[in-house]
Length: 236
Image 1 (tube, one colour):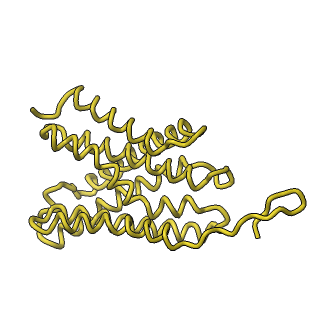
Image 2 (spheres, rainbow, N blue to C red):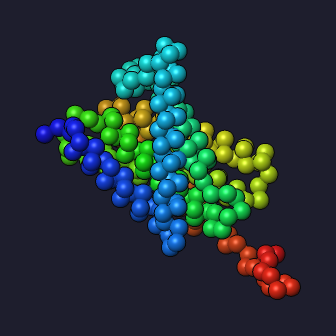
Image 3 (spheres, helix red, strand yellow):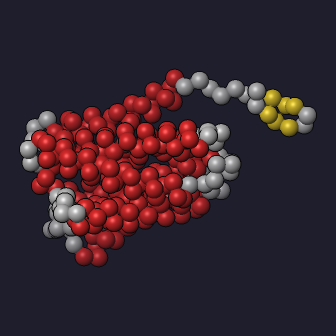
């Protein structure tokens, strides 16, 4: 039985809702974070659609078959896909995240980013996997948010820690992080289209941000405690 019609769209909508609620969950802020994530994912989808249409107008018809071609054409197609999709996610997330001075900035931005990535991933699966078998399509749609959230992690963290950074420094950090995300996305797509070792290459591309997040959380120095001064809490 193949995925098609309202049943497939309903299944994807349910998966997206579960992911958005799960990653947005925080006392008193779940709804706001979820709404921001859905809006960010929608903006990302629209931007990616526009990006692919621009490529079509330029005579570059990006198709999956290109990724299975010879090395250089495949690498070029993978790079273009990575730039379009990660750039679209960055734009969508950057436009909807909470203001820098609002409380719990880091948690809000990371939750919003994960929710936007989930919406983007499930919607992509809904469009790309129509006609596939249900087990394959559901597994891809269910696990796609993990891959897209990991790929978005570098620039999501850069945006989450924007407080106190100068505009120039923030722009440099976000640009560098987005370039890394696009490169990993392109590498992952290139690898998954290769027979044999391709799946290992795809897993390795996703492991890079996962290991970076783990190492960052494990070895990053704890912030200095705030001290009481003149009736107010201030840092050192």
